[in-house]
Length: 115
Length: 113
Image 1: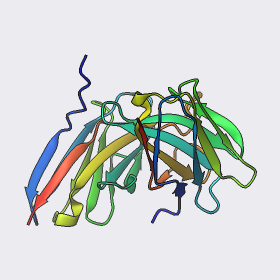
Image 2: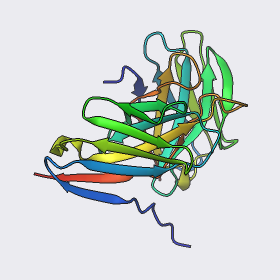
Image 3: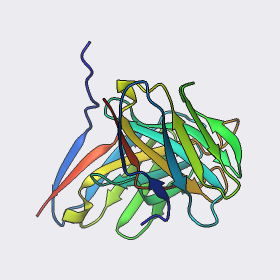
């Protein structure tokens, strides 16, 4: 059959707006979560992380929220800039058992920022 | 620049061939990870090494193998290549081995014709 690529969710915003990117993770035992930004032709770039004993963490212009009850993670970007345009991935890690450092990635969200 | 280096940047080869991808981790990092990124599967974990020893394994094909050397650089060997192996292969590294930030290299783009 024909191979079809992943259809990534997209988010388009105007420069200066706040952006919210959402992610549903799969393993209720995951205890570490990361957001990565990937620009075209480059490797994933670390943005911010959070551990399961927290529900919010802030960085520079970014905030990550974790809701373990519904297995949901979000990334908020304040005052979004054209340079923020990229694909954003959430990733989860369950450090117990034999998973060690294995990261399980979400499918990604394409963020486009219009000047 | 993450500090993780990968070579080569691009690789074009034919079906049935074997290739080796190389990764040097950030200075001080003991763990190395390999991931595959394809259009239809997204980013998938392949394998992790810690200080020379295999630590965790994902859905890595039997045709693929990896190792980490005493100087901590790692190589990913892909053999009997198929068209479907065409993808981006990323290496990442971290200080120890779990529950911590992984820093990714720029990747190797493999095209199998």
